[in-house]
Image 1: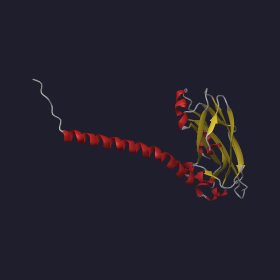
Image 2 (image 1 turned 30 degrees about the horizontal axis):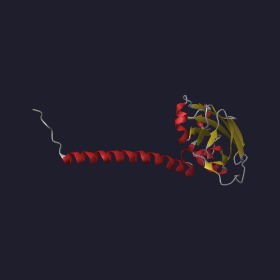
Image 3 (image 1 turned 180 degrees about the vertical axis):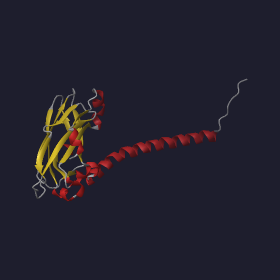
Image 4 (image 1 turned 90 degrees about the vertical axis):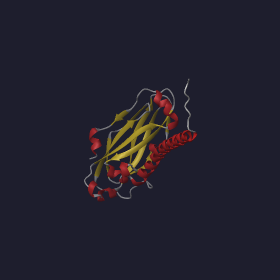
Length: 208
């Protein structure tokens, strides 16, 4: 004789409610994590936190100090099959002087890919004083297969940086970019071979 197990309807409904709550909680946590990324980026760009540079509202600092500072350039890629690098490794300028530097990007994949650059400076305290007038990082960039593009960035170092006790003796700032594929092209980039690269100057990471 086969024994049948009788399931309590109340217990079954309770299990369903618990499962639904767990799924909803998990989904909410994922949503909060994705929402936190752009919010954190906006916060950093508004405050300079974490070495995030500032977007200048004016093209010139208004005054140029008789003091040199060296800006070193760093380039990285993450999940995008591009060759991305600075044209020159560094430039020495006067504090407050508006200067143009150049990066170069080449699409090594067999189809068009759109990239987006994130950026910061080292040391992090210099972020609020590094002002970009124009930059390829302000917009997305699409490259056709094999296409190479010159990517300029126009910037100046705010003379007020010399009033910060921790930065008064600063001699070097490192400007760093990391190029990512935009979301719509992510499957394409992931289908390519691993292309994560880093072009940097070890001393530059010391920030001075």
